[in-house]
Picture 1: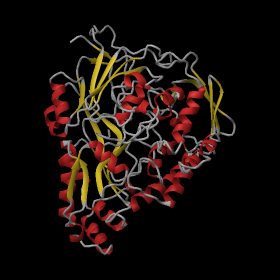
Picture 2: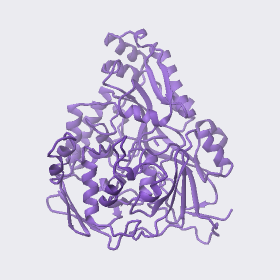
Picture 3: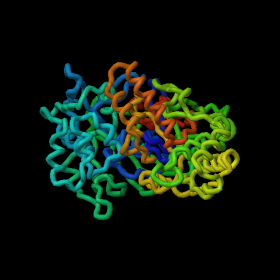
Picture 4: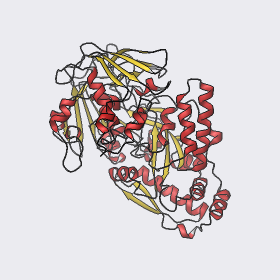
Length: 555
């Protein structure tokens, strides 16, 4: 998922966002507080509450609680387990998945959840008029890529949508037919973006006249009444630019046990130093530690450290000068000392990253990654026929509300000046504007952007940079890369998958649409009265999948 800290979805490396999963065992005979409320910081206001449109982790943080997809990852992240579906089967061709929904499951308004709700949600996700960023993740479905690539104004679009490999066999049986076998597809069904949606609710609220998006998913005070979901929680309050509150969904009757936490308050504090101060004053129950406070908390009993399956990078806009020149991109990527960054800027809180796949996942290949080499950087620039002075004034886009992001931007600025002789200009603005400009290629280069694992399969990463993918902010396109990834995705044999993915990784590193920076290790302060909260490497932002025993003790 696009990481914005990522977080999500890649909002940016604001240390106040989170990528954790709540899990853990029973807290035994712990005396509980009278109010079971969990308070934490999203860092950025979600752009939508519509699960099909969610892209960033600060959006997914709401989506995973208010909506429930077909399956969820197992606690050890090695397989999938039931969620909205009690079970699934795959036919002998490897192309037809049949999901048996949980009998008696209900929406937050008490209506039954039906297979037709999944059909509508998946059709809507692949409708090009909706412009869902995660649509490409569902291209394995029969006719999905073709339909999603159609002109939104095409008069035959509605008929084409009906040809998608989606079927409600009966109210409790949802069937998905793929174009070809895709061993990873079960993981796609764990995403909240594929959660069911009620067509009657979407139509009831209509579309926003200005933006054209469905009103039911708009982040506004009205969401408390209009957002009908099938998750364990429901939205009870939205205070724009401040916080979102969730309460238990009294009609939830799915596979997950009832959690102890009855209220979740998610604040939207863009400055991680402010969030840290609120944690210290008791206004937040856990918080990501700002880089500036690293030394102060190293020995704290409240500190939890965990490596993340999250990699951050700088995006190059390959459609615009000067980064439409691959050698300029390669030169910049060779001019930044990632080891120095981790040691001197991030105070040891991470690993240098030179390629897409993080350490801890299959296909991690540090030997294929970008390398720090100032001499090579200057030679590349010279061979490109571009002088360093002609690049002066190139703008680096970043979130100026984040002290961490500002520090990263200043480090990159200094590295390029020292090692390449280029004076870049720092183009700072708020995080939502940064996200929008990245998405629409209204920048030269910027970040840090990043990706956190939606599920523990490399397909989740490689598909991110496919031509036209919603999370491909560089507008990168490569037939070699796309072909290798497509073939790797289709293989069930791991050795063959690895060979195709190696080709993709080599191509991506050579083409350099991204300047890889670091793999983060999360540092969290958790109040001692928060029981049963554990941190895992996957980016599910306290996703309640195993949070059923998280409790607030008396304090």
